[in-house]
Length: 246
Image (cartoon, rainbow, N blue to C red; front, side, top):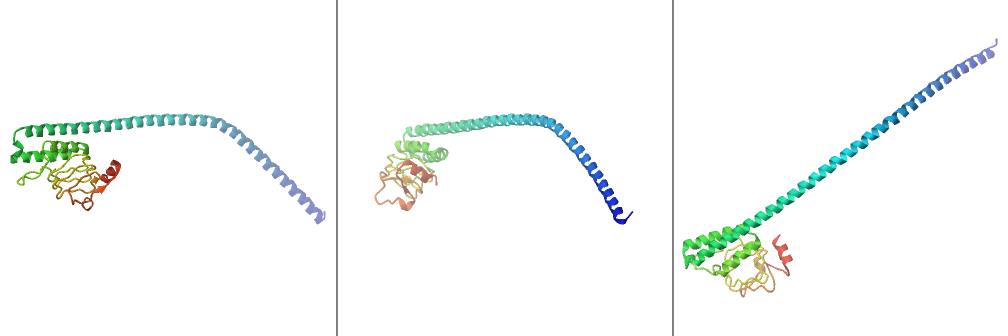
């Protein structure tokens, strides 16, 4: 056999071998695909079970979140109720403090000339300053009105300290009151509302009046300059409140 013929035979053999290998590869690939397909079918069955499980888990989670939300709302309601009760308690306590103060001081005033005695004067001053410290701005107004009406707030003897000397009357709502000749010497009137208040003849020596508000109806002693002592002229209560909250 010639060399060319021998080469042709070998080529045919190689081709046949290659064809056989390719056929075997294809068979294996088909089998793998079939197996993969059957596996996919099983996975679909499993996926349905997994999906059902996930749905149940989500529903359970939603129920848990709902319960947590309800508990949170209940806790929020309880907190609001607590603060409401607390505010009511504080309001009641301040009402009691004011009532007791007026009763005690009223009894002292009714005793003839008792307030003129040094020991009585000192006791009234101490009680007044302690009471003012405990009260809110609205009730501080009532204390000042009461003291003025029973003639304890007017200029005192030179031998005695003024009743409100060093007292805290901060943020007190004293608007539209007649406080002529009242003695506020060295009193702290920071942020007090003095709109429309008559302060003619009042003693404001060394009084702290920073951020106290007034308007064009407020009456001062002739020559008194409110701005240099830190007072603010306002048009309404809202402006006065914003001034006092600074």
